[in-house]
Structures are given as structure tokens and as C-alpha cells.
Length: 454
Image (cartoon, rainbow, N blue to C red; front, top):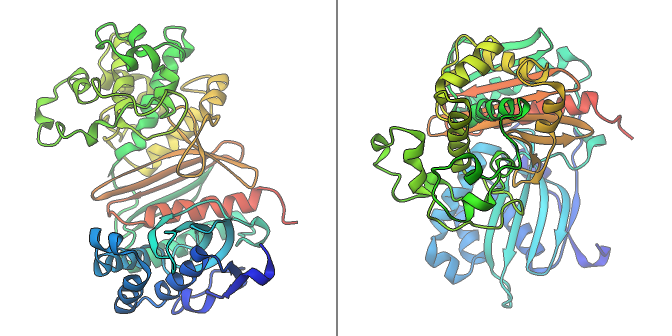
């Protein structure tokens, strides 16, 4: 960026007003480009950091195009922005990622969560330029590891995670359980507004069980990750998905099959779905959204098909198979089976036990663990999908796991294969707290065990 072609933007004071500064983090001042998008971002962030809904609405009314405001009024947009304020706090500019006349992308530090998000501002080509859209991807990898907050020990790690959990619980952003272990040692196990041994709805966290069941059959030579749906499921209707989509595409969310939950035929008809195959008509006749293996797109349909694959190859019901060969082998006595795409209930201790069993080679062998935890397809969350696992590489530290959310549920389960940590955060509120806590633990563990500061 040319120094004479920039406007100075300092966001520290307003962004963190009223909140204690995170430990070990010095205030930052960066320059935004004086492009149309950069100038719009500066005005937007200044208004955002006031936390004043009236001022924000007035600013958005000036910034946005007439077409955008016709679709959604300034007051409605201000309500959404205030939702970001409640979930993430103020924004401090941390890095400029991309600069174009019509778009600017920056990484911001979120004052409430102590994490980082990626903020996008797009403008039209008119003069003066008007905003067409603002979007945020929260909880991305820190942009500058040497300057990131660090915990000097396991004790400090647990203390800081618990401190943030208390803060988020006080704001209503979190109500749930945090379990932090290393090997068999418990570093933190505490409930915030709820008992620590409570059972929680899992949502998509249990996709990991479906993935492991599938990989067991692959390891036994009864299934191939290169096999197509049609080759494994003879009754699956003919079409592009039957002949082009493989087991690996399903496991890595790269199949291109539309999500059954977006089908208008799904709502109000759940009681009609008595078998896994009853779900096929919701997506089997829809065209593929992209050539399989070329992109990532989260689709629950993929894992419903994998559940059918497990039943076809094993000759057992999905629930019986997962209970016998995944949950029982992992010692998960308080976990129930949901659908292949998610659901069921579990506790923090049971989920940590699953991580130890899986990574320890007791559910599949070490070679299959390595295949499963490799990242294959770049994703919207900033990592790469493995076989039924989210994978991230932060500061040289590998992180694998899965999240889960629907109304009244927000969970994240992360495992650190090389360092032996398990981080389980389970919440029964639909807020950002669970993701914020898991993200904070990732950042502190990667800082503690990753590449040393330069």
C-alpha cells in the first residue's frame, strides 16, 4: 500500500471502550487505503464502534445504495450490526488483507471474544461510491502470531479460558460447560450456569461418529473412498450424484449435493421420514451445485447418504452400528445416537473420551487417523475439511474437530493430535459464546506450543 494513498484509522479506544484490554496485547494503529471501499470502511467502523444504534442507522442510511436500502432498511441493518456488537464487541483493525477500488478486506480483533474476524466491505462504481454489502467471518486465524496474547503454562491457559467463559456468561453469550484436557489430565472442567456433568444436544458434532463408522468399513476393505454412491447403494436413483459423487466427496463436503434442510419439501414433513432412504427424494433429483471435488459446500445430505452406506455395507441399522462400534468402544456411556447428519446427546467427558479413542487408534488404525485428519478441501471457516472433520493449522499446530449448532444449541469440539489436548465447549444458548471460547483456546494452545515468536 502506498503511504500517500491512505487514511489513518485508529480503532482501539472506541472498539474496546468499557472493556478490559486482553492480556499481553498492545494497541494497534494501521492505515486504511483511501479507495472508495477503504473510505467507506473507515466510516462504517467508526459508527460501529460507538455502539449507538441511532448513529449507526444514520450512518448506514448515508453509506448504502438506494437499492440495498430498498431490500433492507437502514434501521433493519442497524439491528443486525448491533447484533454483531453484542456477540463480538468492538472492532480493532489488525491487518489489511485485500484492497480494490470496489472492495476491501481486513482482519479485525473482536474486543468481547478476544478473537479475530475477517470484515468485507463492497461498494458500487458510482461517485461518490455507495456500499452494497458488509459481511463478517468471525473467529479466523490470528494475523500476526508474534503479537498474539499468550499463556505461559497449562495453568495460565485454563485460567484465561475460564476467565473469558465467566465474562461471556455474564453477558448472556454463554451458558454451558467447558472441558479442557491434556491426555488423561483435566485442566479445566466447569459449568457456567449449569452443572459440569450435564448432557447436551450435539447437533452436527455427531457427524464425527458417522465419519468414523464409514472409515471403519473402509479400513476393513468393505468400502472404498473412491466408490461412487451408485456403486455402493444399488437402490439409489440414477443421475449425476449416483455416478459422479464418491464417498470421499461426501466425507469432505465437496459433493455438490444440495442440503436437504433447504428443500421446501422438508419443513413440516419430518414425521414422514421413517428411514434414512426416505430422505433421498429431498435432494436426489436436484442438480449438483458444482462438479464434485472442486469446491466445499456444507450439506447435511452428504451425511444422510453416508448413514445409508453404513447400513448397506454393515447390514445393521445406523444407530446399532454406531452404538456398538463407535460409542461403546470409546467408552461413551452417556452418549445417545442421533441421525447420520447430527443429533443425539452427550457430555463433555464422553466427547473427550471419543477424541482419545479416535486419535489413539482404538476406533480406526493410525494410518486411517492420518488420512481422516488431513485437510482436503478449502472451506469458508478458514481451514480445510478432512474426513468428517474440520481441520486447521494455526502457528504450526494441527487442530481437528467439529462444531454443531441449531436453535438453542451451540457446540464446538476440538482435538490437538500432536499436543494431546481436547477442548470441549457445549452450550444451550444460540449465541457466539461457545465458538468464542473454543477459538480462544485454539489461539492460546497454538501460541503456547506453536512456532516461537520471532
